[in-house]
Image 1 (cartoon, rainbow, N blue to C red):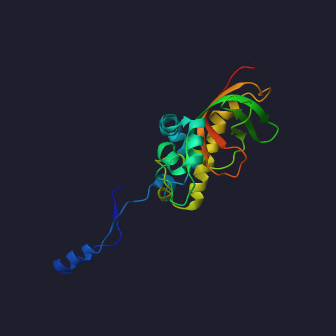
Image 2 (tube, rainbow, N blue to C red):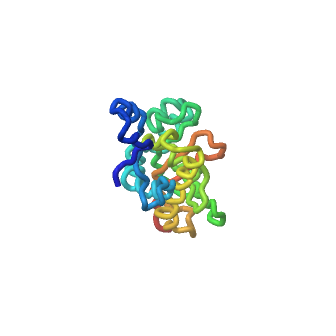
Image 3 (cartoon, helix red, strand yellow):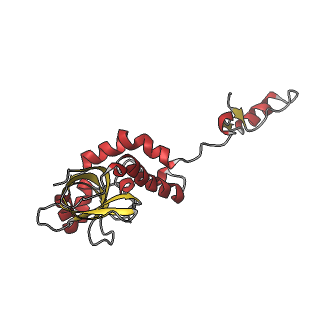
Length: 219
């Protein structure tokens, strides 16, 4: 249907100059679509993540991520320098840095009894855990969302939508990647992860949220 003006044209007997003035005050608005009852489309965080996951989010992380030992060492020494190289330079000024990383190593401990399952990974071969990887289904934080420089808070209507969008990344990662990982006898297996973590998250170990994850066979 064509666009409808928000004001009507004055009756024909009025002077042409009057009609011209009336038209100046009109604002043309798009006609609401009948498909959704005239309302704007509802916000759907899960669909938004699904639309960009393979096309934009995972390729971005693959390109941006650095080796975890290198990223973490620089993050502890100079967070701003690490952020410029491995982080999201468009983050909000008061937000902590979130880093994109490639983590490879051996699983030295695992907690798969909880819904917030994790595995501890030795990345430098000294037998001690260097990072903790979330493998879901319940996962903390919004590291995947916050690591992407093409996603900005101002693109969303409100804080609630932005928060739901962050949670949707965790749900999608679990559905497409993490739920397919083995859960038994993980200790001693090799692991490879591409993901993100938030500096200073309060964890004893950096808490990495994966977008990609592979676990090797039992030793």
